[in-house]
Image (cartoon, rainbow, N blue to C red; front, side, top):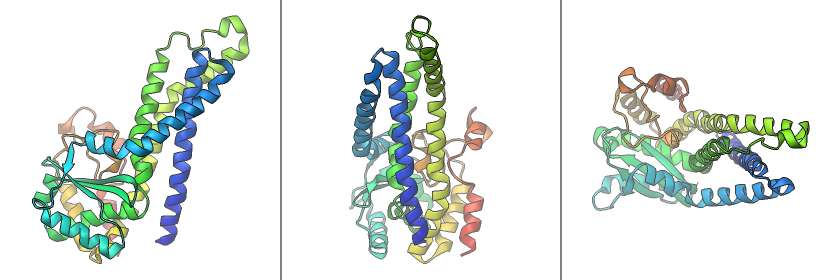
Length: 297
């Protein structure tokens, strides 16, 4: 377990590094197209660094706002606060901020920069449909994400993937991209073509990296959460309820889908045209596989 947590930290650092490099490359192409010449790389580094800094400090608030989460009042949600406090004591973690999302679909996610600056959000549907042991299992899963240092890269992905996609899309509409090719020789033409290909591929690469953030970490968080509660049947029962419940989170978004305990995107035919595509590129391993892994404990 400790080896896997260590690997998570190293992979997190690597993914953040790749995110930044990809962002630098996209901005470099943009500034090159805007005729900044040799200064394009320096400007790209500054722009990517600024974006990364802003994302580091604001991504958790963006994720919570996109999900329409509101602070959970301790008086109104006493059971929720008590369960989180007990699990934090058992796991040696500081208590995260707790939020509630008014939504009938049972789901939850964790976000933040580190264990000292973390938050957990649960839907009202989760509180209504889970018994105490099941709710404790879900909360332990989310606290495991915090303890395993999953939350930083998953939270940064919310803003960085979206920003890369936006910048790439706007740049492809830029009329001078590659415009100097005919006047200044074939070398610049090749660079323009490479830049054009990069702008086309960048959103896909960023999205694939977003998928890489989540899939392997969900199973680890399941096992870590069961270790935290010392009661795997609680989380197993919760995952079975999530599997059987077909309610879709109303405030779902592709940008935050990888953060939830179960993908909030529609995957059944009756849930929308994109359901088959969502299922094909799911950010989570199948719930049946996760349940089977827990039963082996």
